Length: 235
Length: 299
Ligand SMILES: Nc1ncnc2c1ncn2[C@@H]1O[C@H](COP(=O)(O)OP(=O)(O)OP(=O)(O)O)[C@@H](O)[C@H]1O
Ligand SMILES: [Mg+2]
Image 1: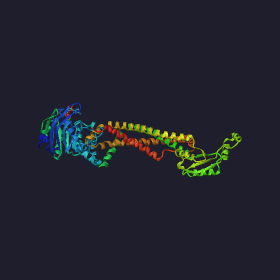
Image 2 (image 1 turned 30 degrees about the vertical axis):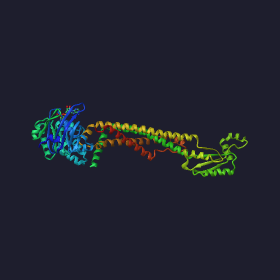
Image 3 (image 1 turned 90 degrees about the vertical axis):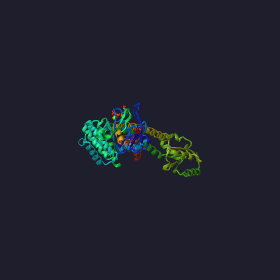
């Protein structure tokens, strides 16, 4: 249950599924979004990342997905060194990782179902299977009846849930969720959290960025805190 | 696994084309007309070449013999000429026969010949070559060899204009190559621009596909296919337009061409030439997509 064992990470003896060693991320333009961040998440853990706006939460999740490059330090995800990852391996890493983007990243000209289906099609699943699984994922977030709507016809919270459904549809090994409840009311937030707890039970490792201080408590989970790119509270 | 991937990629291709069909059609038309220029040039060239070959088949070599050559000496010359493996037949034309045919050709004006003290014309040998040797390149060599035979005074073949005609065809062929490259390049630019537009309008989708773990080849294949279709489609369009133009030309100008070509027939592009043009279209498509990809590769 101790999620972040930074000294073990520093010593290099670790079995964590996500390991950061003195990671620094400096964006073009010189903004240091992460500075010398080290921590580790064990396989099967469920951990929150808190911090004020601009603290670097989204950046942290994005580098783990390989969507942003690390400027300095090392990052190992599921045995792969993401700082020097070949393209083939990166796509494998992304296929086993679910990501809920803060800005959802839904395609406007596709229905909710098609948006979720996209993540299944790239695996080459048969169309029937794709439709079935996408439908179940949408039903799990309470959007079965909105499956044919395009994102612009959905409320912010509904779009967010489509994004969650897409992240979960592949039963990912790791789930990275960036403010997954940012647009949801407390009741819906708890529903989503219950769902996260359920996939946690099934063995998925979760890292969830949030503003909402009540979520870690609700889930009974630990929380690391970022402040101006530095890790200030560990576990 | 992959058959379904291919299925989704084909669907994406169809959707891409449907979503910006106006651009695709425009680009198809542009490529079609560009390749039409190339195709019509090739057709003209191919027909001119046939004319040349046809005229070349009528080529023969005239050997003028030394004056006062004895019959025995003449037989020796004939034998030496016949010994050449390229020679099909040799026919002797005596000075008297030559004069008679000259008189016939001159008609009324032949009276001037009557005043001559003796026949000024030499005897000659008309040499026909075997089929494969009846072309400008070999005929020239053979003629110069035959002119070296003892008893041969002079040699004449074809006409200067034949030589010029073939030189002209060589120039046209060279132009075809450079013009072709230029036109193919233009087609590549057209398709590449269309593809670039497609890339921009799908930027978001491409980004999302990358983030959920799609491989570059999965993402690119639909664009590759679209590009290939435009290349081949453009070539097919060019061929179809050329066919129509060819029919119109033949209906109106067929007779004139016949006169020019010594009653040779007009012909359309051969099957290999048609396949070549379609392959060039395909190649244009492939090159365009590779060029576009290299500009849009993932960072
Ligand atoms: N693509 C980018 N280019 C340049 N700077 C960026 C980029 N993305 C983020 N930043 C900067 O990096 C810092 C951290 O941003 P980040 O999005 O990680 O914060 P955050 O903790 O997720 O904030 P929020 O809670 O508002 O989502 C900010 O100062 C931001 O301006
Ligand atoms: Mg953020």
